[in-house]
Image 1 (tube, rainbow, N blue to C red):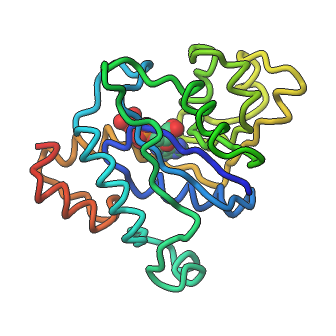
Image 2: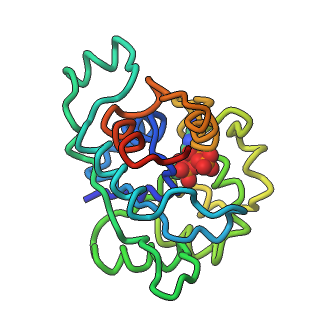
Length: 220
Ligand code: ATP
């Protein structure tokens, strides 16, 4: 069983999150991608805007909905319409701690490895996060527990020279896979800014997520 942990703030989940998860699942034959909103991300300067409950609910809706906004004709054909992806699942493994302390990926991944003995574990992450890996807690352990699938992002291109500051050993480098077929300039920060101005961001949010945001008055 090949399982990818896809953590993030998901404030809110958007089209590129879904797109990159699908591309990774296809490219690396993943059986499962676990979308896990984080309770309290230690490296982000600002706390999430929406509550954990709302972020988790939006992820669940996005995965149930299965509609990728604005798919290309090719993707539509491949997905045969709006079918949800059976490889995708929501996970509350990175839920906030009762004492409000930070969620460290190394602890979350160790817990996942314990829950899934025998599985091949992957972490799915954007290049912006991965290039910061040396600031994470226990980066060498993180590279041991899982293989990493790193997705390129405008302003965070991926090449060997971009990886060199991470000083990966040859063994570590062999566990890092670069996915450059998705390269899209979409961020939740920009979406929140647009939502605040009353733009519903059609084409960037799954319809069920857009409806949830509207119904709960989020990001106003
Ligand atoms: P924010 O703008 O609030 O930081 P975000 O969408 O960049 O939001 P997260 O919600 O934490 O950040 O994203 C979850 C994961 O998806 C992270 O690993 C992030 O790097 C990755 N990701 C998000 N957007 C993109 C993108 N456009 N290209 C590649 N990776 C992305």
